[in-house]
Length: 348
Ligand code: 3EB
Image (cartoon, rainbow, N blue to C red):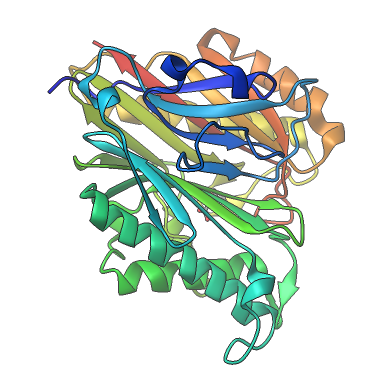
């Protein structure tokens, strides 16, 4: 069996529906930032983040696919688990699920906090079912889009309810080990939109990477919530001759503290330093393998007006940046103005 050849592409929304059948072969999933991407088959997983692009006239979609020249592309298998759709190659699965918490209110689920927790719980329950059925047990990367992330419900921040429910779901699935926590992003989307998550899972165990200058999120002190966020700072997947590095949403945090309140340029610089450290750390952990090449970034900004300042910081790193999209999203701590995630690949 040949290599997985996982590929990430950014393609315009316009014209997506007219792409030939050959183009769609090997596509595992498509992600729209605002609008639902037009795909030719209802069985192809799609997700809508609810994070408005800040610098593009034409809306782009993210495509995760198995590249050409791989046996995986010939036989992707689609499955559905309730509201979750997923698609698997031989060694990789992409899946997405979206749950409107407002539809869950009713007997037994009284109030906003309970509905949010139930939506989170339900989404992760389906996700773990999908991993089991695909026989791709290793969760490597999850993107979480949480409506009104900084809002409060029942006296607690909604992000903290999300953390509690996510933690409980991992525990119930026997997956609460911090050693196996996936790389993740968890940012806000508009109040009233559904909770959306999408993910990649693999047949082979990845290597989880932490940032030596940050306390692991799963060890944050209780001031950030009773249940810690369960994610790793980065995840390195080695699949037959290729190395894929998934860097989690990365903010201006050193130790466990947010730095540079009110200064988006300094926050962006600090986030990019954290990303550079994770790339070094990945290189150290995967010694002897080809280094990670250019990074593909997603920059989440709390305020649209911060675009120019954030872009200036990213452009200082342009020699290592292959693509970048700027998106509006609230960040999980009120004082954080920017969060940056990255994906990179090394070819032998
Ligand atoms: C942080 O470092 C910033 O809860 O899954 C980044 C990435 C953040 C993922 C998550 C949260 C998450 O704590 C916030």
